[in-house]
Length: 113
Image 1 (cartoon, rainbow, N blue to C red):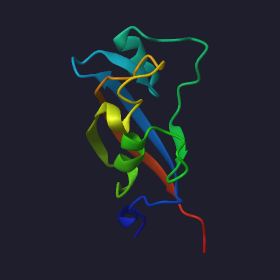
Image 2: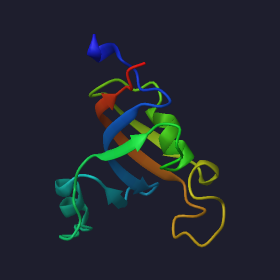
Image 3: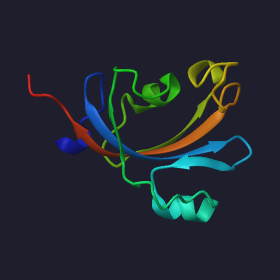
């Protein structure tokens, strides 16, 4: 039964992810071994799944949209254009960039109604 739950708005989900630029260079990840492999390891960071409540705008829109409909243990790769990322321009270092995320759903918690 729980395998069939699909993430939806209002769910608290936990995901592992790797964020890359289109050329393949990793800029962020929730996984320690990926960070080490990519040369971006930060010993003061806590590498663990990212918790997101879908629909609360806690992550960029393209990332949040990708979570909707995912099942437990499902992995997907999603391409996020600037319009669904950090915007076409602005002060954010990732503004104007198309980003590629590999996402793995590790937990889905639904509020009991």
